Length: 259
Ligand SMILES: [Zn+2]
Ligand SMILES: [Zn+2]
Image (cartoon, protein in one colour):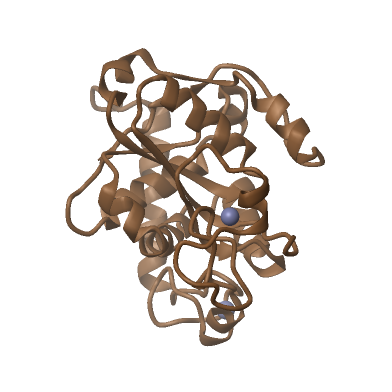
């Protein structure tokens, strides 16, 4: 007989959690990149640390695409000059490459939600300037069908850590600020323009937040910035809802050869 309020599913979740905590306390912490033993949980070993490509200046003032040489403050990349994104600024912690993919895939499709803790910290550092100005921090939502198969939204896990790690004025976490109202399928394999068409009108603001968005600076959180089509679709909805500024912070970003 279970105590009131404790269903078998809740009990099994609690047991799994307790088991994980126990394992965490007896097993040595492992490197997030290669499973080597490290000193602290959620850390990288020295080799992986050096192997990860962290986004660092000099970069485009708008989208943080890295520059090979310093071009001076406020300079924009070829991509932004050709077509300005509708969000104000985008920042990312890592360059999307073979190594960061190895970190992202188990996080996205496996159950390595622990990775969010370390990655969220890197993101908070990479986006410190954006976080300092943000009123609301909102994850890019998943469609309920995808949420059902994956069981968690990786962007929401990251958003939670990012808010917790924000130094100074703490922005408010708005986990359901945006809703994905249309099933858009996978974006992979689509070109930039096709991606923009695919996500057009895919999002809306949850009625609960409609009155809150006006005049606010919103920081959108996602795992990877590829063409920016998803971020732009979200930014457009927020701007129509009255948001004053929309910034974007992702764990990784795809970097194309310079134009
Ligand atoms: Zn390692
Ligand atoms: Zn740029």
